[in-house]
Length: 367
Ligand code: CUA
Image (cartoon, rainbow, N blue to C red; front, side):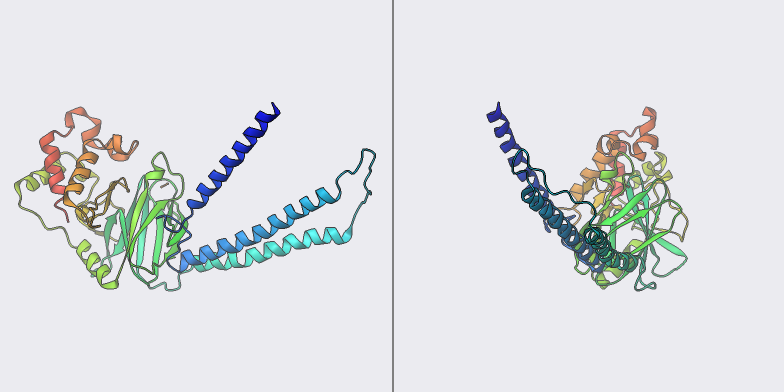
């Protein structure tokens, strides 16, 4: 019996060691959402704070556990009738264990408070500003129109920012509380309906980063994702200008047919195909699709449209659109399109194969 117990204890020990190693590998900087690979001043200041708090915690852990082990050994019972010396009250000791933790808390509080204010107050209030609006379960992004300050350029799925520049972010939500988090660049601030939370971000390397909703917001919370493209200023300007321009209309007969089906089937009730909206006016319920064919991901991160070269691949995009539109509920259970979209709630309005192909052709023409 005792042998069995020992063997189980060894197994338990091995299991815990493996679990610990696995957890530590979860923190490797190579992971796309690792906070240990900070890229930008906000994430870096948060990482620094993490190390300070971890250090303070380690000091407490070692001191308490060390004292515990030391005292257990030093004052262990030597014999059956051994009564240790009875001591009551020690002012020096009591003062020390009050002053020590107080000093430690102050030591942690000072950098914490400075970091919180540094992260909240933008160093450049006049810099590029993006409105980020949370929806169940996708992110909407709005930029000031490059030529007309009364207009917004509306976008979904991918956030683009210029490298080495402060970007101010206004956070809002149309339904429940979400949270905006780009682990390698900055995080995380709640997106609360009718409450203007703000933050600022900055990326110091070009490339693709991964963002994630960080507040439980319903069944598809884990699938509320976005990508962040950090670009050179020239690339960013060109991108924004392209986004602000309505997509070119193709005269391909299938595309023209798809455009008609898009309207007659009710898709346009929730999805705009004009990228420009009046400043501050809420968009339609679903993501703006003006340039959907240029996006690297669809349906709040459910589909990746990129080919091996890292660019959007037309065949992959079309396959993803087809899978998504033919049965959104099976792809992302609980989503609004499946529960409210005209083709999905009434079998009489369901899209047939020809209509589906036409819509896929139309949407994949919206570059
Ligand atoms: Cu949005 Cu979790």
